[in-house]
Length: 156
Image (tube, rainbow, N blue to C red; front, side, top):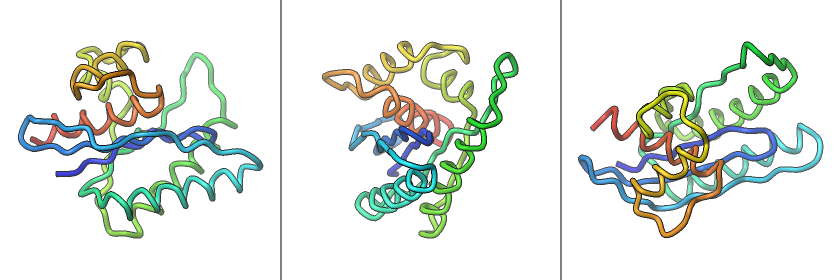
């Protein structure tokens, strides 16, 4: 099963693709979609890039990180922008009839690292070890790969 993880962001959206066969996980691809310009331009870029990634790699399922707002530092503007990015991703994937699943950041960290409040460095390290990579992936790509790993652990 090909699992595409996506870590949404209005400026940087990470993606990571793995192949899961039972409990054997194989790294296929990852990277970051970097956007610039006005919000509408950035959202359009995210939609187009995710659409191309899905067409190229044909994942069986897509994992997207569930939106959350930190209670100690609420930022409604950032939440709205994140919502737009998530909408672009969901639209690009959903228009192809591919199943989309969501996990909270804590669920992804717990599945990947073993604790729900792991740091970005811990997530990156465990992604590298789990997928036997030569070097650390970019931070947003590591988060996306962690989402894919999380789903593989939950469904296999």
